[in-house]
Length: 393
Ligand code: GLN
Image (cartoon, rainbow, N blue to C red; front, side, top):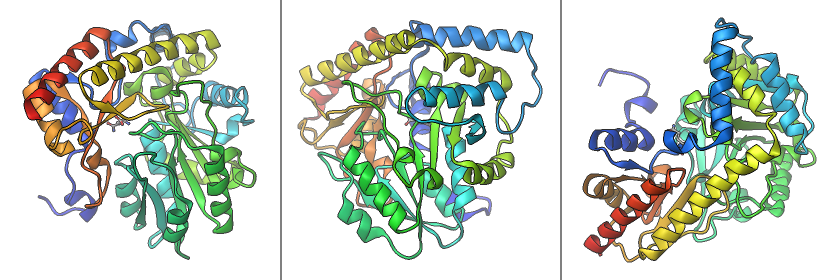
């Protein structure tokens, strides 16, 4: 390979791209990368309304550079959306990004200096560690332990050194769909304040919670407002992942710093999509509730089908994902082996959780499946996975 930065020279394609690529090539059902199938989204009034709004904006409004921090209408709408949900914000605190992944990159670029240690939890979204490394930082992983995957105060404290600069928290957690408790938030806030840490909070799943669990954020904890970057995603809130509209929210001086990193990363984000999302954030609670019912039904359908097929499915409280415990389901193959066989032999793409760990300490028995798909696809995928289980156990 061409000489380049060692972080990239030693890296493969992301597991999401790998599985979606195989899925396209083999014509498999794609329960790997997290996105709603287009046919599924077509049954969702919220998504359809936004597609109309974007088409209108494309035809009738400007196609030229919007302000780097986002169109005013969207910054206002994001601030209004959160203010209506208990987090008072001004539009000046909102920076629109090209997806949450760009927001994460901008936050790490703005805040991590060479030698800084950053606490990450494992499993973690695969972008975190390479970004920290690319900035010369040192990712320090604190593993979450199955079956509860809870934040462990002693393990976090043991990972902190005088060089620790930041903590990255994904809550709700992809891939397990667990949600931090109010005790966890108080504990994390106390640690951040005590050690003068910044919290980079990836909250893209904030709108995808089940069983009546409401979202909370570290940014709302006493003493945390000035040291937290809260990251959100329209892709997840509205099931429009390809639009790549995200945002970061922070107090004024932190927000200014973040805008400096963002202005030389993507600079800005397509305006028509921003105007559409600005409309969407003002949609009625009933439209959000209808979308939520659709997700909840699909979650129950996939979970019920997999359990009936003999799989042990982990409890989840959030996200579009259910995770199977392969070992508990009688499957002795590793998650990576099972995922490869599932896509090639059974025609179902999935994500092996070990791909979301760095190093060798990963559990090798969990498989993630995305459920935002039409009923017929879910049922067919369950039948195929049932057959594969019978073949391999
Ligand atoms: N967040 C998405 C997921 O977990 C993946 C995004 C990506 O493919 N980069 O499926």
